[in-house]
Image 1 (tube, rainbow, N blue to C red):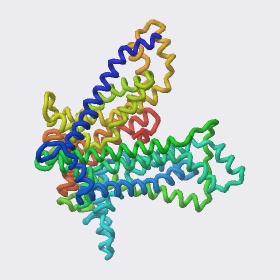
Image 2 (image 1 turned 60 degrees about the vertical axis):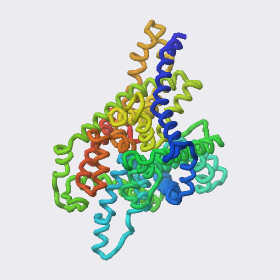
Image 3 (image 1 turned 180 degrees about the vertical axis):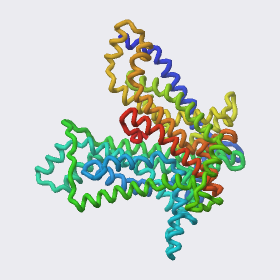
Image 4 (image 1 turned 90 degrees about the vertical axis):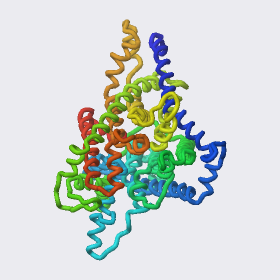
Length: 551
C-alpha cells in the first residue's frame, strides 16, 4: 500500500511525459498533416496534394523509388544477415565472437559517411574505379539506386543479424531433437522447426531495415544523382526558396509516416497470428561443420565484415590524405584536413558535443522517470506510455524536423532558428533508447526491495532516489551513451533545424561532400567516428557487455 502512495507523485510525471509527447510529436505531426490539406495557392482545404503524389509522374516515381530502394535493401539485408547470424551463433567458427562484434560496427557509422567512403572507393575518381580503369576494365557506377542499395544493405544488415542471433539462442533444443528422432533430415529440421521459430525476428529486423531505408535522405542525396525519393523530396520542398512548398512537404512527410506505421502494424499483426512461445528452454547445441563447410561459412562471414568495415578504414585514410577538391592524392600524408576541423573550424565539433550532451542529460532524467512508470505502474497507462514512447522511432528524422520547424516558427513559442529546437528534436527522437535500456534493467529489480525500504520509514520518493536509481545506473549509463552517440551522428533532423552558428559535425560532413571537398569531410567524419567509438569502448569495458547490440 505504501508503494502505491508514490503514484500520486508519479501521476504528475505521467502527465508531464504525456504533455511532452503531445507538444513534440503529436501536435507537430498533426500540424504538418493539417498543412498537407491546404492549397499552396489559396490556403483552402483540398485533397489535391495527396492526389498529386499518386497522379503526378514525378511524385509517383519518388514514391516508387522509395519503396523499390527500401524493399531491395531489406531483401539483401535479410539475405546477408540471416546466414551471418546462423553461422556465427550455431556453429563453431574460428573467431566467431570477434566476427559477431565486428559485424555490429556498421550500425555506428552514419549512413551518409558510409556513402562518402564508398564514393572514395567506387566513385568516378575512386581507388577501385581507377585501379580497374588502369587495367582497361569498366566497373558499374555507384551512382544511382545501385549505390544507395549497397550502402543501406552493408550498414543495416546488422539489425537482421542481431535480432536473428538472439532468436536462435532462444530456440529450445528439445524441439530440434524431437524432429530428428522422428527421422527428419537436418534440412527439414531447419525448414520446419528452426526457421519458423526465428521468423518473427527476421520480420522485425526486416521491418527496421525497411523503415531506416525509406526515411533516409542523406545517402540518396549524395550518391543517388537523379534517383529521387520521398524523404529527399520532402526536405527539398520544405527548404527550397526559404520555405518552398510547405503543403507538399507536409503531404510527402505524412505519406512517409503512413507507410512506416502501416508496415509496423501489419508486421505486428502477422507475428501475433501464431504462438512462438517455448517452455522447458534448453540452449541450442553449438555444432561443428565439416572442414569445407566451416571454411565456406567463415569465408562468407569474414568477407561480409571486411566489406562492411571498409568505409571506416577509408574515412580514416582520407582524413590524413592530401586533397584537391574531390581528388585525393593517395599516399600523400597530410594533417591539413584535421587542422581545418580542429583549429580553423572547430565550432561544429563543440556544437555537436554541446547539443548531444544537453539532449542526453534531459533524456536520461526523463527516460528514468518514464521507465519507472512503464514498469512499476503497468496496466493500461504503463502500456500506453511504453507504446507512445516508441512512436518517435517510427517517424523519419527529417519529417520530425520539418514538423517541429513548421509548428514552432510562429505563435507564442518560437523555437525555429534556435539551438533549443535541435536539442528537443534530439531528445524526443533518442529518448526511446534510454527508456528501452532502463526498463529492461528495472524489470529485474524486485518490488519487494522498495517495499522493504518504505516499510522501514524511508519516504517513497527518497526510496526511489536512494534504492532504485543506484540499482538502475548501469541501464541509465548504457541508455545515456547510446543516446549520446546516436545524437552525435544525427543528420536528418539536424539539417532541417540548424542555422548558421549551430552547424554540427554531421552538417559539415554533408556540406563538404556536397561541394566535393572529401578531405575536410573525412576529417570531421574521422573525429565523429572516434567520438562515437570511444565512449562505447569505455562503457563496454566498465559494464562487461557489448553496447553495440543495443543501437
